[in-house]
Length: 491
Image 1: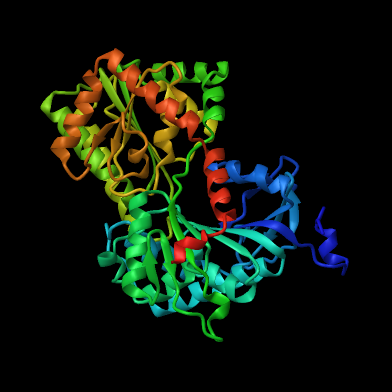
Image 2: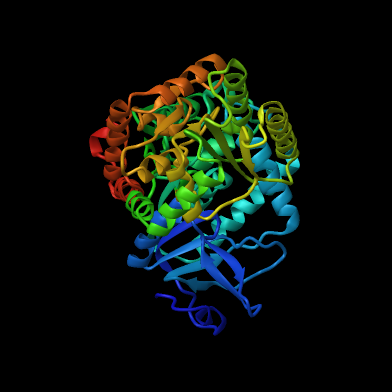
């Protein structure tokens, strides 16, 4: 039965059910207030929504997630052809499940312990409770034999919970962030529970082959499953475990961007004019470098600023001839580590500008804002060199957007080898952000690169992005999820 609007839920009629369900921490909509004060919903920007929305619209799909406000319960509703199933969260849920376990335990652990993770049993208890709430909401609206695609580290227990409640479902999981090595993962007190939660999926997708390998190594070491190739095979099913004794397959499915949309926006006359205006506002320097990141300790912003500051001090870069624009979008501002990072970055920017600014030019233009896609495309076009210096990153779509926007083959990407994007954008100038001298050399290399060489490199990277866009990502994953296991894989 297909749901056309929320009235079906309230009328007492049969509850709608769906063939295809996406489960994510957030719904793909933002609540906006019009000029008349009326509240409405607008589709959120982002590659995940872009990739999955067409599939949902074609297959009677629904999206299960939190709508963004605490202590508020909403009825299911429809927006832009997608059926939305809100999962309520209380303020304490956000503090313990999201800010706590998800972002102060799992996030730092999965990003190579750049900062120490915190392990609190109250956070874990709430994480379990909220995951159960998401699983229950999903099980209640899934048709017999439906496909369910669970997204990201906040919901790693959902696959097993769904498997127990609805063994008829086809369940996929995609991990958007890195997956740690067994040595790092071993620190997690609830490592076995997390692995068993993920193993409830038929296919677990990762950004990089190395992440899938780490997952399988952890499965071998910390669970009773046998690992054979890409498969994690459970012990012989007993009466108690039969419902969850599925075979889990781990694969790399690197996410991408809507390459065509970015390229079309890059040819928009208004955006092109805005790019020229940005250069003028910066004093028309010869070279504009750009960093675009969430204000997160995994992004290597401090390492980037240190390298840039040393290049200024060495005289290899001169203010007026070059300028760094650093966009740092606010992120998790209620988490102490992020508050400390914000203070540290702002202090570094202030010190560098105080030391190197002139009356006419600034060394670093620091922008602690979020910007819509059109403004971001203008910034990409205005920039000559993109600096992506993440210490650890699942993918980093900003790197791909910059390359896709430069349809004239100008510009150059300086890219951390610790990003998932480095596996695909191999023609970039790859750097180790922990090596400040090496990063300085990489920036100078990009600055002085022969235009024909840089054009050839950008052309190859854009060709890859055209062939491997976000639509192909979703199609490839869902096609793999639909495939039965070969019989000889268990022999």
